Image 1 (cartoon, one colour):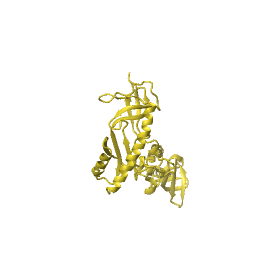
Image 2: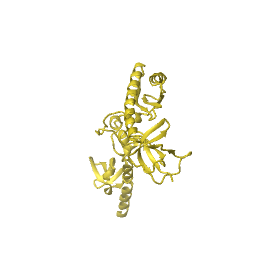
Image 3: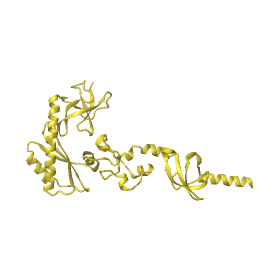
Image 4: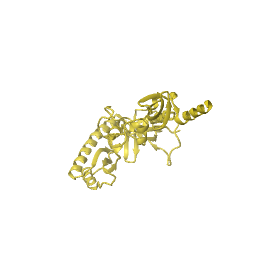
Length: 285
């Protein structure tokens, strides 16, 4: 029976699944050598899968072996070479006059056959990176140079900087391996200000953290009247102007003037209250 493990090749990156039958005793936190689309890589085991699903077509890719101390030393050396390649690529991009192109990372495969340059570019039009590719190919003739364009969120993940919330590391740089869709509706349901500076992150897109508590807010809001709905309160009729889902209260603009907060159990829908009032008036007559 195969031993399937989840491997991550970067500190915060996608998890890939491999058959670790060659080293069944491998554990979480250990490093292994494994093949990838861009050459042989060294990665960290981050997950054990004791009951794996059916393998993909062609079967699971196999781990080659566990990493040795020498492998880990070589890995640190490769990180220095990657930095050199990154600085060279940025310098050449400036010399070639690229505008709106941001070189954010350079990756060298563990077997040193591949050099992958990760970059971001403003706008949706395709950027011609052939002149920059040729410069790097001349500088690193023994490596197959590839360019890979990233989306704004992936670019922000690789750049240093403090999060808008004040944390020294942003969520995308700490633990987010996949980006869930984020919408303006999520901000509205949670009562977050729709000012662009309040809801956009360093990437220029809606903040990922708007997803975290959205489901709880949406579920709690189901039991509350919607904004602009008329309700009957202990202080008379009014219109709902704001919701506090987690507190299960609403803010009501009263017809008699003033705004007051009420609990959910203190409110009646206006149509039901009106019907009751009319029924009482008929019975009195």
